[in-house]
Image 1 (spheres, rainbow, N blue to C red):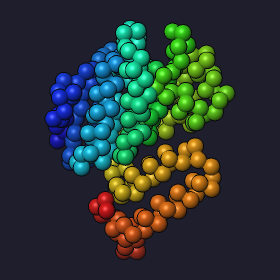
Image 2 (cartoon, rainbow, N blue to C red):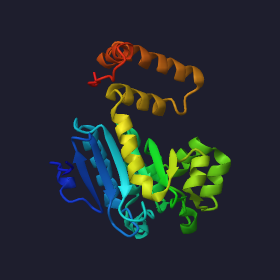
Image 3 (cartoon, one colour):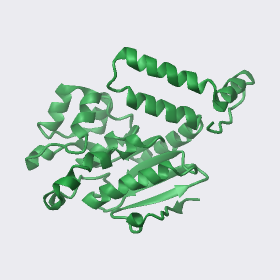
Image 4 (tube, rainbow, N blue to C red):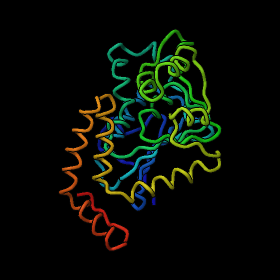
Length: 268
């Protein structure tokens, strides 16, 4: 049964515009942006989201984290007036806060539908998997405000789709559909809107069946080698592979394979 998230950190005593639940039986946590109808993300909310991801990363009950939006839209973006009111020092931390899903050692799934603009898109890009419904529209519209994406959006997007498509999205403030995002390699899957939750549920079940140690290792390796040259990436992969060979989970996986049974991984 899912239970409300609790933290002793006074900065999380009252969550600003989102809610968090933890379901130990399903080994998942859900972070839901909850300022409908558009789930606008405030400046303070970005700070709190970072703290929540860090807390869930340290929670042994949680194997997978799902980030979603309440209602018909994931998020239309940030609180525009908040940018004018925030100090330069605060704004300088935006990208670090929004990158929390990427730094989290556990798999993070973004469940996208409707508007996924600005920081909503940037948060999703920092996740490991983006499941888009057929209602999803992605955009980085900051050019319309005389700005550029400030929380890693253009940088992450360029890594995924290259400079030409990134210029199309960023410099023209173009919206792209979930289907187009899938074709371009941004979305992991695109599904009918009515199937978004069940598809995410299925992915969670799939991920928790793997070794948590191997999952954490794979995520860190892939993130760390994203901008590495081939020889460096292969060297790091070899070191990670070698370490996993001594793990209990690898031994269990090999035995289960030969015994034709499902493995029981323990994360060590």
